[in-house]
Image (cartoon, rainbow, N blue to C red; front, side, top):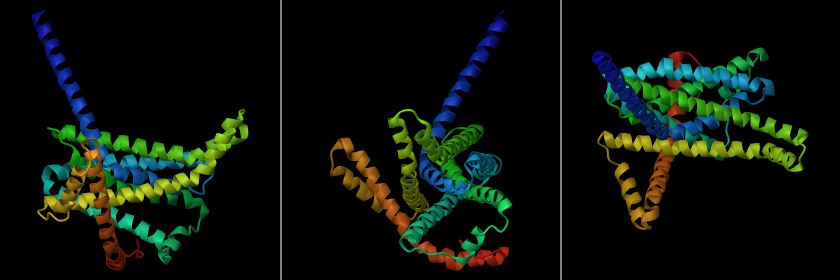
Length: 323
């Protein structure tokens, strides 16, 4: 009997440790997900374009295909690779983060530059010209999964750097939880966005109450503005997050500009207001200055990427040059 009681006591202790571990994993995943929020916003803003132009009946199946590809990217390719990196080459995480941050700065700056000075490239027009309509859906899904891989790599790397747990398996579990949660949030949100106009049309045409029909018409009319807002927020988030990653990376590598001036200005601004809003003001100033740095850095990267790196990559891979 005493042996049984001892066994039950051991089981209870193990269960307690497991429950604590689950709490730790959830807390680490939550913190890591918050760090990657800017990239998540951009991911949600980018994806709806891949279902544009398809029949409504194909929209959700296409999103599901992209979702499965995203899960494969995160859990099968990126998770094992990043865990090996964290175990055997942790020094490489900061440079990789900075590389991803540079990509975000470039993408955000290029989007803004394109909006202010519209331009097109012949290779992009050629890529958009799908000669065989039957392969259009497959091509769109492949393109979305490739884009997702880049954004997922940034999300997972940011998350890995933010996870602080005592063991390797808890780190892996936290990272997997972040990947699954972010995938569900992004593509669940995308599904709601792309079907919102269909819901609006249904309400506008079949609802019994005039208020419901008016709401349906408002949903349809609001979609273009919502997509514009998502794109704008996504671009701003890219510049803010990318700039923040690069400045923090430079600081960790011993180059303290512009990290220290930015935080000095944020601290000065927080001291100029009441204590109740000091933290918020410091965050706004820091994020704004990180975004300005990200935009400036991204604009400087545009000619480097388009005139040097892309042609060089094209020569190496034998593909068409381009962004």
